[in-house]
Image (tube, rainbow, N blue to C red; front, side):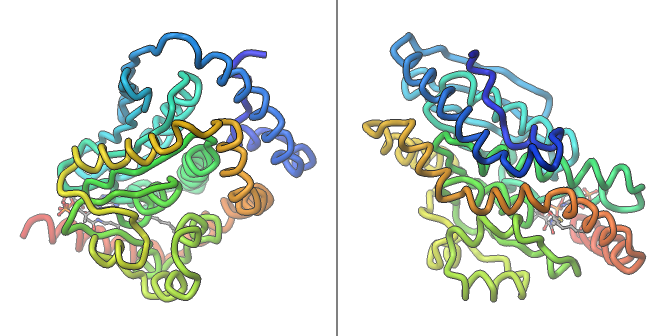
Amino acid sequence: MKLSSRIPFRLALKQTPEQRSSSIDTYQRTMLHSNLLRLVARGGPKRLMSTATKLTTVEVNDKTGIATLTMNRPPVNSQNVQLLEDLQKSITEIENNKSRGLILTSAMSNVFSAGLDIHEMYNTNEERLRIVWTELQNAWIALYGSSLPTAAAINGHAPAGGCLLATACEYRVMVPNCRIGLNETQLGIIAPKWLMSGFLNVLPKRVAERALTQGRMFTTQEAFEVGLVDEIANSKEEALEKCSAFIGSFAKVNSLARGLTKLQFRAENIKEFEKIREKDVANFIALASRPEIQKDMGIYLENLKKKGKK
Ligand SMILES: CCCCC/C=C/C(=O)SCCNC(=O)CCNC(=O)[C@H](O)C(C)(C)COP(=O)(O)OP(=O)(O)OC[C@H]1O[C@@H](n2cnc3c(N)ncnc32)[C@H](O)[C@@H]1OP(=O)(O)O
């Protein structure tokens, strides 16, 4: 069995519903095997790897063995299909290259990610909406379901899909004077349950409910106070260092035991997600196609553009 034979959750999309219903067990079995191989392989020399897809880059620190995955889609890392696909490729690459952990960050100076690219949802057709939502699901599950230690160095604003990626990670460090949150209700849309699961992992239910119903965007300080972010750093470099220190805290922990323990915590959310993912795509298409939602998106985009010109 090769290292690459690990079956990521996103491949479950290609399975029949019967196969998919047992995907957690299949996943855990294959992960157990690949993690055992990974442990055996760890004795060998570290490789410095730096590969690039178009909208993400991966760099592995040869001292720590930690991979930094950087999103690079100016001006605001809005998540179009290509960025979502590149994120998945980079996560797979990091999982296969024996890295000790993954840090997600942004190449932009003041934005981590602006969330889904609204242009991808506005004035488009059902097939495009299907692809956009499926790739968002795939990118989320690739990160949320990774057995590697994951951390987000949030070096800028992280609304909606930006917050989704950050909360899919196990640890978050954010720079001051930025905002993070799930603001979907402000756009007149409902965040599905899977999209809330990372948020619910880190916030008390009452705080999460209020924030989601208000579409609240937390300042860095507020996010730290409620536990949405774990630490505040004064710069991106410091955020990266703090993320590395978090991943380093597992150095003496058996990585197989660590990874499986993490996935046991996440298994229920993942199982629920696998059950509803196709219906969720259909719901998204139906919602995003509604004339009133399209109208709101158009207004939202216009306002964003006007704000940019001020
Ligand atoms: C139907 C069901 C969907 C459910 C789930 C949806 C999830 C989502 O992720 S929806 C996206 C939600 N995102 C937002 O509401 C964020 C909107 N953006 C901002 O608040 C700000 O841009 C910022 C805080 C992220 C950054 O501010 P700033 O640095 O001042 O940059 P500008 O606002 O001037 O933006 C520059 C440029 O980028 C365009 N833009 C920003 N965000 C998006 C986006 N999400 N999609 C597409 N385009 C975006 C903005 O319009 C500007 O464009 P130009 O004026 O043409 O330069």
